[in-house]
Length: 369
Image 1: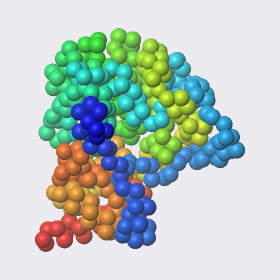
Image 2 (image 1 turned 30 degrees about the vertical axis):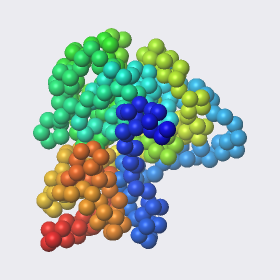
Image 3 (image 1 turned 45 degrees about the horizontal axis):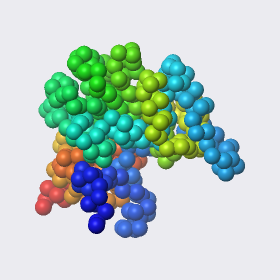
Image 4 (image 1 turned 90 degrees about the vertical axis):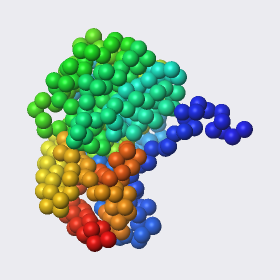
């Protein structure tokens, strides 16, 4: 038999997650000397310098397995959030937590609910567990519709996934609608607040989900070291949840899921306030520049609360391909049912200027036919 005939139909039908195009691939394919990668929402300043120093000092210990329970890192994260270490689950990126939650709570006959144009892993993790993925349409302007998400929950719903800010639109939901949804969620539903980009949010009424861990609801807050701390290559994220939820996650995770460099680097990065400040300034300045320039070029975009911006360029795949030939990598969004759009990560000043120069040329050429 074919292997795909031996697995769940939902698994056989999956389309693999497509990561951003790596710089090395563009160099091989097109011979571009110094391409600019603005596709994967990475920190353009690079890793936290404190994390780099700590990792270098620990290189001689790479022959040893890491602490399987990430004890020191859990202590540091718990202290930062003023919760008990037993409420912290360390993971190989927050995506590991998403997959484990689906494994734990979803099976055939059950469903998950999330916003249309939400993070692709929600549907993938649900399908891999044999469940039904229910994507709820957004409101005009690519805004969340939490009231409709509440309407979609039924007795077979086990998880609602809420990424705030949303990837790839950059939009957020606000405190009033979040609290309205919380009042409606039944106690058999796990609420996953995926806050990978929360450090970049500027809105005063952004609802930090950690403030709602009151023991009455099954809330799991996800955070990551990939974005603000610049440690995407280490793959380290975490969940904040009840002690009972953390125990369940630990029962099904792989041993040594967080590497030694990841644990050491993340502990050091937590104290690197200067790197965080610099990152936020670069992001704010870059976002303001791209908003001005996209407006000048007549390109519609969604106001973003993250470290990327989603722009309507008419044909996302065609513009992506054309920008590659200018040495600029962005993210086409056809896989998110947004074929007109690209997602642009905020880069350094020179990288942002190269993008706009290339985009202006590409859009002008397309307008001329």
